[in-house]
Amino acid sequence: LMENARVTSTVAQVKSYEAAVTTFRDTFNAIPGDMPLAQNRIAGCTAACNPVAATAGDSIVGAQAWAATWAAQMVAPLNNAAPAAVGAETQLFWTHLLKADLIAGITDIPLRTAGVLAWGESHPAARIGGGFVVGNGNGAIELGSTGAAGTGVTGLVLLIQQAVATNPVITAGTQPMTPARAAQIDRRIDDGRPNSGYVRGYGTQLSCYNTAADTRYAEAVTSKDCGLVMRIQG
Image (cartoon, rainbow, N blue to C red; front, top):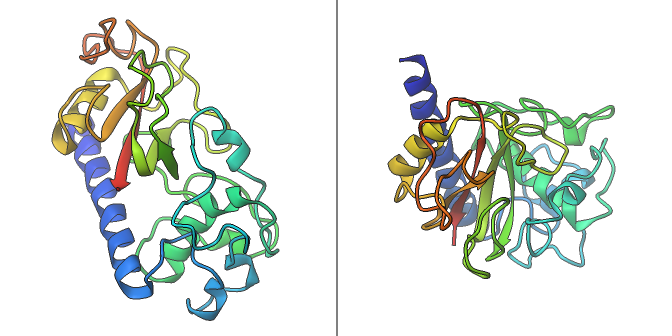
């Protein structure tokens, strides 16, 4: 019952973030994290809210693709300083939503000194385990998947991973959830398959998913071997 409740809560989190992005875009005509000169538009923001001018307003949060370079985008905390890299947008995404009063569960650490990258501080914790990071999917294949090239998720994506400031790993037992819980979340939001739709599983074959084409989650596996990638805006 407790695990089912965590699944339900995690699905509700995902849908709330999707709704928050939609409201933000309707209000500011911009994507959170990517909005130029955010300090002039969002109450309580400072210059630390402003993404790098060269890439601000390009409708992409962070770099072109999250796959393979995710940790490189998880830059050091802003510590009340103007961002110096496009990867800062992946932090500012949450800060913009927070300061616009559209989400809770984090702090405004990027706007203060001595900030840290941590679940419940700079990034929201996921009820199922681990927490949420955000970025841009360009069709690259998710970690551990055997799908065809170019068939990964595209658009603004949420990734549930175990550690906040590292590349997501695919080692068995080190993920945020079991395959059964990943399958439950996938079924409630999408098609329930790890390699299709706009919710994808990542992990080790025969551990997170159990066929060569990874069309099914390995739900009999009881260790935490799965993470999820979810598109929230096309």
